[in-house]
Length: 216
Image 1: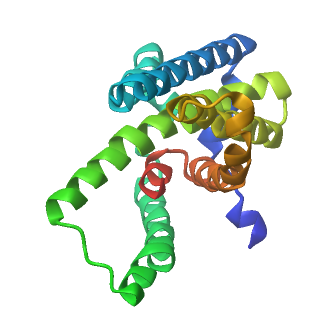
Image 2 (image 1 turned 90 degrees about the vertical axis):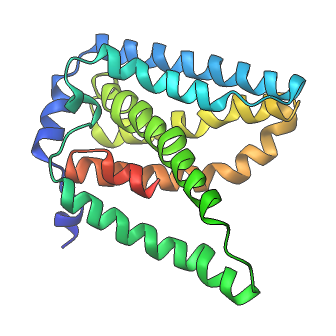
């Protein structure tokens, strides 16, 4: 049962072994661009109050899409689509019930207007989830494999990059120095890293990022 749970899609494993150090350097360069863009977006928000995260995420998401010849190399494929959506949907519903719906009902919280719910779904699915899954699970993390030669090391390294990605924007948006924001970052880092492992498990198990995007 344990072996079946952590079994990887054969096409996913073949993809890992097809990447070269050139792909790794390209992924790390792209990651540096992400840090710079997020820091600038946070700084602008701190100075002007204007949020450009939507435009930043969409623009960053389009970079891997434009430079990759095969969309399957960033997880955009229909392989095992139904199973990945079913599993991720069940996990997501269970998590929402435990963390949001049941506590909300117990506390007497009111349901948001449908228009607000719809806008939240679009924002978190496209701007946050899809963009980050393409950027990290789809593009950056698999291309770390040629550097470390071990899949589990690539997953851990990718997780650290994913967690630290949140640092520059949130630090700059709060007008804090790196040292001032560090305690808040440490408090949220384990939670982000845990979900990175969950999203990665879904991707490598089914060979597409749609399931992890829905759960994200």
